[in-house]
Length: 414
Image 1 (cartoon, helix red, strand yellow):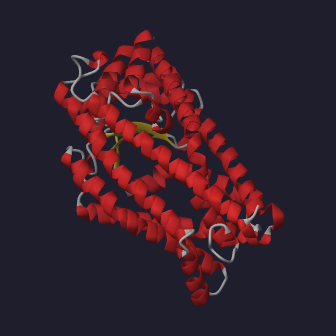
Image 2 (tube, rainbow, N blue to C red):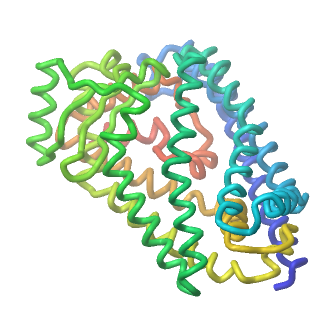
Image 3 (tube, rainbow, N blue to C red):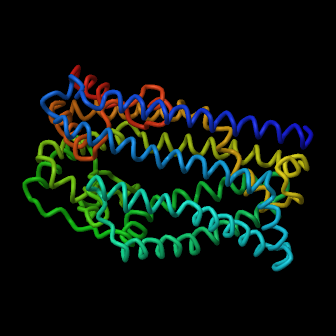
């Protein structure tokens, strides 16, 4: 392939994926607005019209910001690649630091910092304007700065050594470096999954043992029926950041723990909380987490192999106007342009996720009353201002959970 051919291929893929995203987002807004003034029949009597309108307005407000982000991200990618900005940053860092590992680390840090700063205005607008306008944001400026500092520290302490190890493996392991990098990536991800519940998550939230004895007994009985053991039942202070509610289990082996947002416990009745947890246990019973890890591992191996074929190709760099190649530049370029080519495949991963949600719902309906899960879901849709009328095509690409009406109908049939 020639550099010119790859440039045309990249531009065509970028134009197609951007146009598709834009078209889907506009469809979503129009679809939701057109149904704003009528509660769907399945939710009539459970969701008030004002609540339904709030969900529609919330969806549209987020999508409008999303359109701005789409435009900014597209222009930034073009500026970094064909516009020559990435090449200029690379040359400046080489002049300052030389061509060693420090240069590679600085290159990733520089591009990451630029992306963060450019995306910061819309991120802040989402949190402190949109989320606040609809009554969800509880995040204060001191807490936002604390989260930012902790996130940056983790990126340096974990991401820095990991990136250094990746670059080193790419340099010294010959043509099969991608296999060693994949093994490192897989091991690191599994380690983080083990450490997250007890080491990483407590840096951002406070976790306290569940104190409601009647609810605790109900949940422990459910766990016994399901054959699930955990290291404890915990309540997370999610309300200090958001009014949204959720529940999840995390970790592996003895580090498994069940976590409830405090906002969820405030909004749902005990039998509804049990049903929501039964759904989460359904993911465990069907080994969805393991299946997703296996799929992610297989895809990452394939992508690293592909990078191994591209990294020594001059047209890959010349086609994206970055001048000289190199280990760090090849890895960075690949991570920037790969999503452009993958977005049309989004329905495959979204469809698999929705299938898992249906399976977890079916499991919950066997362990608890399906009507309790329906009642809990309706409350969560209402309290989280989730639209009940998403556009089917937009949902096909973007939604990891089935549309509300389809999910409720499936549960009623159970």
